[in-house]
Amino acid sequence: MRRSLWIGALVLVVGAFAGIQQYYSWSLNQPQNKSDGRTAGGPAGPAGERGQSRGGGRSREAVPVLVATAQQKAIPIQIRAVGNGEPFATVSVKSQVTGVLMQAHFKEGQNVKKGQMLFTIDPRPFEAAVKQSEANLARDVAQLQNAREQARRYAELLKKQYVSQEQYDQIRTNADALESVVDADKAAVENAKVQLTYCYIYSPIDGQVGSLLVNEGNLVRVNDGTPLVVINQLTPINVTFSVPEQHLADIKRHMASGTLKVDARFPSDDGRPEQGNLAFVDNAVDRVTGTIKLKAEFKNSARRLWPGQFINVAVTLSTQADAVVVPSEAVQVGPEGQQVFVVKEDKRVEVRPVTVGQTQEGEAVIVKGLAAGEMVVREGQFLLGPGSQVDIKDANKTAETKEGSKDPGVRDKRKAQERGAS
Image (cartoon, rainbow, N blue to C red; front, side):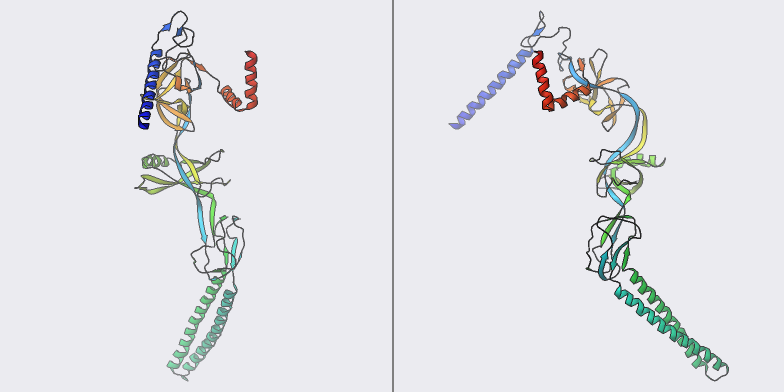
């Protein structure tokens, strides 16, 4: 029983929809009343001003639109991509000696200069090692002086034949051996002093330190896996990005003529883009992605760019002089491809196919099909067709109307004015 009810309801809905479609087709095919210019079931309008619908050619009345004038200006030819900020240099600071971390001489996130002290490791064991090495050196130097004196005396005795040649050679060999021992002691002293200098860690570059990864009081070891801190050099900074391999030939050709300029910006910043130079082109194309890796260098004096940040980059290859540009929203896609609605002097539109080059920053470069100075529709194309009449609106007033409709006070005032006029 329930299934039969559902089937009956479905039949009624389908029948009602078919009746509506039939009535709509009948109303569209009703002839116009020539005496008063009305269509059957439609509002009246001026007989000479009404056109055809978009499907039949002209609109029934003037369509309100916003327009823009095609301009001629120089446009940079650019390749755009998304890249990541990378430090110009990165240093992972590690200890070269084993000892207790006594003190960190900086705060996390602080900017440091090259040569600025960062850490102090307990130096006392290494100071003792230096003193021990120096004592060993002093002992062996004294023994060497005595051996040299003995060798001198035995040389005189050998001349008088008071001693044998073998005895003299033995004394001289002892003196030479002690000279080598003294040299080894000097090297040991230098090594002990070097180990002592490793207790005081200095910054090798100018940059900004990150989080302190090992706190004071911890025992640090030689070449431990965890660094003490990481320093990133932010000025200058690199931005690494990849572009499709088909752009490689153009990039190489223009790089042969000079340094290529690169602009960098990120969505959350509306200021002027950072400007830098293309500094690196990788020596191989990635076979997996079919892209080539590039790297640009920026001064980044204001530190707007940051390591790891997603950055929009644009590599400028050349500049196209006297290019015809229109707002990108003026270009529509029609049955025959891209097209624009050109407004003629009689306020009627012409549908014109165009060839679009590149589109950037809201502007489309028209390679073919449009001349500078011609007026095109940038908003309101949905109701237009070939020969449609348009009513050109002021973009500023339209924006004010939209803003006023959001403001309750302005909206109430407009309604009061409309009631007074009626």
